Image 1 (cartoon, one colour):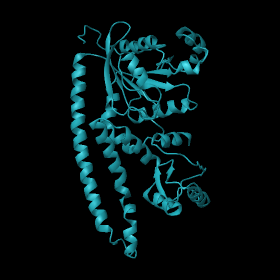
Image 2 (cartoon, rainbow, N blue to C red):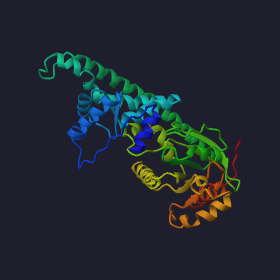
Image 3 (cartoon, helix red, strand yellow):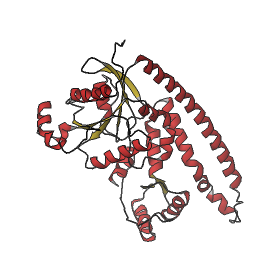
Image 4 (cartoon, rainbow, N blue to C red):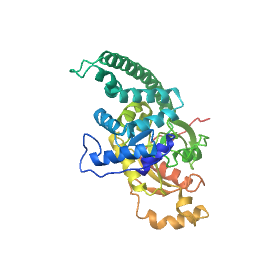
Length: 358
């Protein structure tokens, strides 16, 4: 619920009340009747403009909650898509968000025209709004097909870029992690980039690639990607397939974790399970526990960080996924992180010859 509140704030909402309920299984009304009435009373009392629910609702559930509360109702999926729409800057990002929006809206069109259906007396399904619904469905399906073609063109272009990079023989690292874990700050440090850093959810939507050098002098490419989140909508995962394919081309994934977050452990599980769904579990990975300067307030230097973090690091990480303490903001632990990443390249026997790099 706290995360839902953070998402709502990111979308520009002002939160007036938070209501929760534990149910053994979902119901056709989403909430129990008593809790639904409590929600309606709270909405009236606070003069709320919108109610946000923490799961993806079926069209029927959404209509029922709206009928009871008499205010606009959106679910977690719609909220996240709205944030993506607000943050998308590139043409590719905007196209992918539009595809997610249209695919989310298509099964929910009937609710948009329920007021016209009521005018027809509810005889069968042949209300006055039916023709408009079918027209809208055809228009949306056509728009979805056009968006998919445009995204496929961009995907093919990305494939050409990746093939060109592959011919250069440069190893590729990709940043992965929960949203707002500090991936872009680390990306700027290791890739000598100047991507804008913002303390907000989903600040990065469009993948950016930069060149850097490992401590050995070996050049590499590093990519910053969109962050993950619990209950990431399937419509967004599908729409952002072209973007997420950048992860599949990485030689090593750098999993960035905000170790100061109280739910850091569950964040790691969300990222790990999402990567498994994308069939990336076998990609070599380095676990970077970020924001050590905040987690270890007594640390005044990089050496202090190492000394203070030794007991913790002995309990986390595995040979398959080593854990390293870093502070991307301070630049602490970056050399060790890159050395650990290069070790994976050596194990994979990737090319390590002479490169031309600008």
